[in-house]
Image 1 (tube, helix red, strand yellow):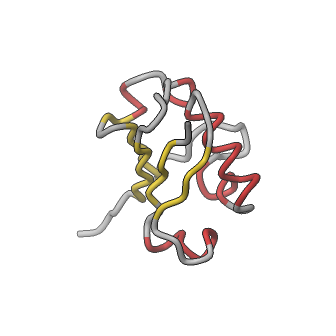
Image 2 (image 1 turned 90 degrees about the vertical axis):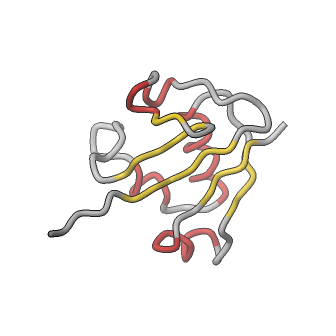
Image 3 (image 1 turned 180 degrees about the vertical axis):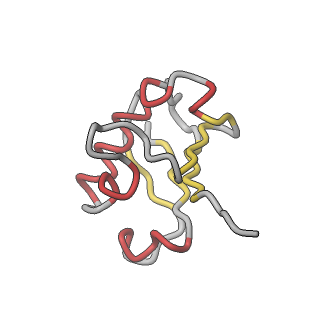
Length: 91
């Protein structure tokens, strides 16, 4: 069963304008790889040169920040929602 990935407005051009995308994956790493396969460009926006999550991107699996779970190895249950939230800075 697929998981739903919520796409932020700034990344919607990569998903053809869609606010959500359904992809397969058992871990966050799998989800990102399959998202990249279906909509090229996401991996560059989400992962750094070493393959780690970029510091300015927050990803949540079912409302839990993956940085406090297992990062890219976080399990993504079937039917879960993965939310991509770009960090906002300013003053």
